[in-house]
Length: 97
Image (tube, rainbow, N blue to C red; front, side, top):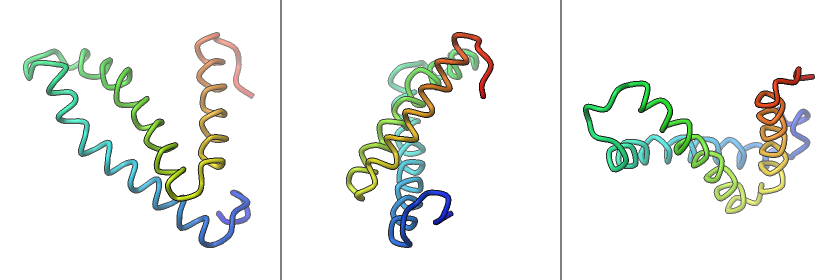
């Protein structure tokens, strides 16, 4: 992973820590956010749609915040740009290279 990402050993540890903290934070925040936005008896499809519209972007923002805190903002910003380009191509229905 070190050679693929172009970071040193401490950078790899920081990146893995950022992914861990972001995932844990989203798991902790998901239930209260979804509970606030939807009643418990809302249909499953509505939970999925709201999850994609709220929690997925929250995960991306938290990646950047934690990445900045651990000195890896540039790494995560590059990954975010790649993800946005991929999503743009999917929405525009162009083939992904």
